[in-house]
Image (tube, rainbow, N blue to C red; front, side, top):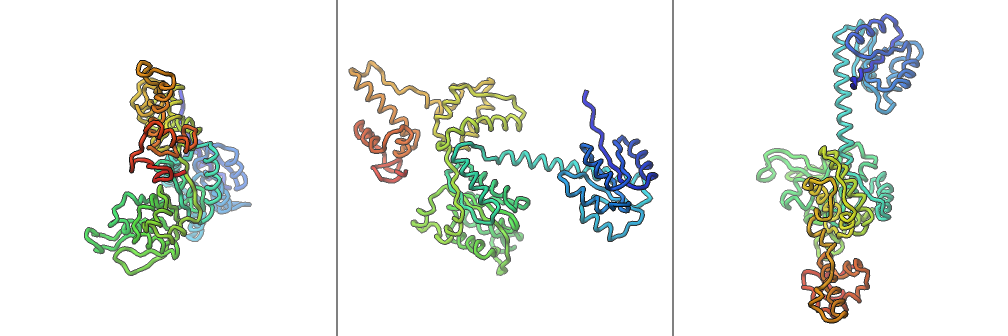
Length: 471
């Protein structure tokens, strides 16, 4: 049977009578008691003993005084709470001890109830700090960038180079590729890691509200503004703001964001007052901003201010080698978070998932895995358990032998069926399909003409070099 660990209290005091008195009180209350007669011995005991929870530390001692010992304790990672004790305390000493990280300051003679109350309060703060640390670790676990593909290694190298600077970063990539994870990785590895990370989805906020959301507003500045509101830039002061889908931002709002980037100045809606903010800006988009500039939908001066460090978040189909790694990662995380029993995928199911194009990228993969883990009762998920569109990768492209007369007819029908299926999987994108089936694009166009396959205008590519035909 597992026994509960006793709370360990280390008393550092040069007065033996004080140590004896505290030992009686603490051991009677069920605490594990440790003692030291001076600062040097106290630091050694702290070094040698695992899991000291609280230190009761005298101010005036021969050799190292209590403030020196306090400073040394608090310089160590995961240091215990320290309660200072003194018979000749002054307000100045108490203030200095508090600045150095002391939890509380007790004056001699020590009273039993006062000591025990201080210990309980210190232990409660210890517990809250541990819980916060555990919560932070669990939260950060969900924002990890996973991948061993060369494209991901290149991205990580670029993140590590950009993170320690204050440079503005613009992240490109399709929806679902993890642009937010890239932004959070930059913040987490930056000098601003201890400050706020504020995220704004520019596409999700109506145009008439986005200025208020970003810059705040004064009470009565517009209908519905019943109180003063702090904007996202103000909330992120000292930290990082992540402007997701910035390509969907209106031109009017773009000009105000440019002002923040150039001058560090923010003006609330309905106010004439301008105030300064110190914010690092990371932006992301799934659009080609150069095309948006040509269409007069995005400011070129803002683009150049944002595009100081451009980073590309690769699509899942570009790093298929990472799919198995991601499947394992999502399975383990989901099982841990939801107290589910571990499940695995059959080899043929994994093969089907690797072959699937994943137009929704990592986000789609994660959603599919979670759905399968919830809805599949078996411990091993087979190919028949996969969604129909993923299973479709395994269908055989063979015509009915009774419907053809010659080997050439059989081959042509099978090839046509194969090409049609691949075009459908790739959104009727010629270039992407040609790469997928490992044939030159010019050859694929010849096959389309040979089999009378027509690409509908507005759906895919109408002709070589036409809309959507991008390399």
